Amino acid sequence: MLNYGEGPGKLAGQLGVSVDEAKALIRKYFTPYPDVERFINSVHNFILDHAKVGTILGRVRRFPELPAIGEMLEKMNFWSLPGTARKNLAQANRQSVNSVIQGSAADVARMAMILCERDERLRDLGVMMLLQIHDELIFEVPEENVELAKPIIRELMEHPLGFELLVPLAIDMGVGYTWATAKA
Image 1 (cartoon, rainbow, N blue to C red):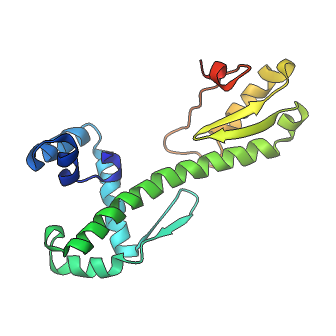
Image 2 (tube, rainbow, N blue to C red):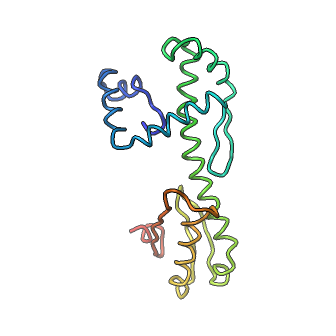
Image 3 (cartoon, one colour):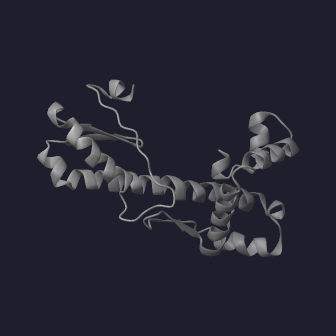
């Protein structure tokens, strides 16, 4: 939950430790990942200035309550905010980071699905996309075409956006007569 901006108060309550211990745990958690903490903080700062965030493909989530909270924050710190404003800001912080991360993941999955569905080579091989389960795509492929289809599906799923990502996508593939055997 820390990746989505859970604060020390909530973490302390969940773990049954003091707020100071929770702060220390949060610091320890982010020590090897300073860029993750910077990313989270940049999203939190962005929503205060813009009252919205976007996914990698530009889908937008708005936070209309934030301009008023931002004005209050110019005059006081987070802990001095009225309870409702503090709660709304904490919620917006969590939702904004989640929207960027999960929304972008959904963009990637959706684009991979579209590319696979439209690909003539896969269609000629008799490949049918059956369903999506979270970040997995399930295909039905004639047995004689499995080895021909796999590199095409891999390429489309690892490069779904038309541009290279800073962190390359890597997929795992499995083959089986059922989803369970394909995952084994």
